[in-house]
Length: 95
Image (cartoon, rainbow, N blue to C red):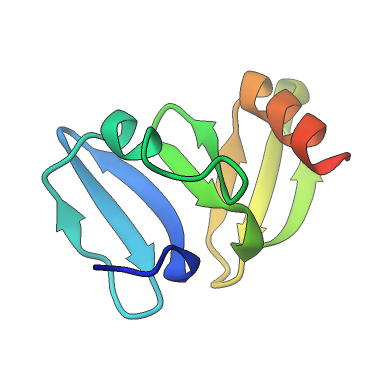
C-alpha cells in the first residue's frame, strides 16, 4: 500500500499505470481510468489523457500553448495540462 500523499504523478503505459513517488516508480496492472475513480478529487486532478497529478506536489504553473498550462512538480518533472483540464484546474485552484 502507498500513502496517497506520497504519490506525485500517475502515468498511463498501455493497460498499466506507472506511479511516480519519492521511493520509486512501480508499474501497476490497472488502467488510469480505474485508478482515477478511487482517488480523492480534493487531492488529485487529471492533467491530460495520460496523466493524473497530485495537487500538493505542484510547485509552479505557467501558461502553455492554446490555453493549456504547464505545471512543474516538486521533482522538476513538467506536466502539460490539456485545454479542458487547464480550465478545470483553474476553477479548482482559483487561478
